[in-house]
Image (cartoon, rainbow, N blue to C red; front, top):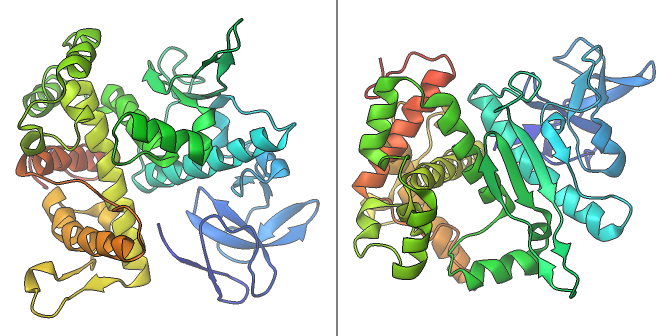
Length: 362
């Protein structure tokens, strides 16, 4: 994620900021320029202090302090590029529901930032009624005996469902611990489930599908049987040499989605490090030296990303331990996983209309 500067006073501002704390300017994010703009009121709407010539207004969800993204005048949609894909959202008539919606919206906008940076296709149900992207943020149900039935997080034919209760830290952490997971966040859910969506969008032609199956396995494998086997027997003994996580080892579709999510984690965090000028160069540990002197969203290959990511992630984990916190990135990138990440990088670059082949950069 980039670090931004207020167009009015030059103060540093961040992706989720609504107001510049230095000059008080109202701020809004444009999905066209991918910049956080300082705004000035004009004719019942707003105008940016630079870059965008047209008038803009805030996404309708700004009324509940859920979204700070902008919509251009004449767009014809009251919601921004991210929020317009939502179908079922948390209620806003009570503090708990409103807080859930705010946290979910924050993670969703972070997801869409990456999709827009990569210029990936994002067909909605207006374009593809059967398989277009749509989000349902679902509340848990209570049966006749008062037992809570948790809503499910998942993907099916373009529909991404997310359990709204996981916006609560205690709920999400209890699930993480009970499932023995090293990492579980709202943003992680979004990135994983969108990976399933882009399998259907980008892995279509015969050559791409053949290479994907060579790397991840045959996605036609019975999903229910694979999950049952995983729950009963656990992951294969050598899973760390072939998969990014134990969950990735249970089925080829989950392997792809997990690798997609981790690719997003790595790229966006590297962009943040680059924006802040972070580099690592520990004395007498030359192998841990790294500098992000390239645009991670336009990386030539996954190895370039990994060479910078491993030293940075080790430093991040060490900083976390110094604070008594768990590792930020408790995962190992084996040669097999890097190969899968390289496939995803090429797939994304090709989809963004850049001249890449799936094997090598042209």
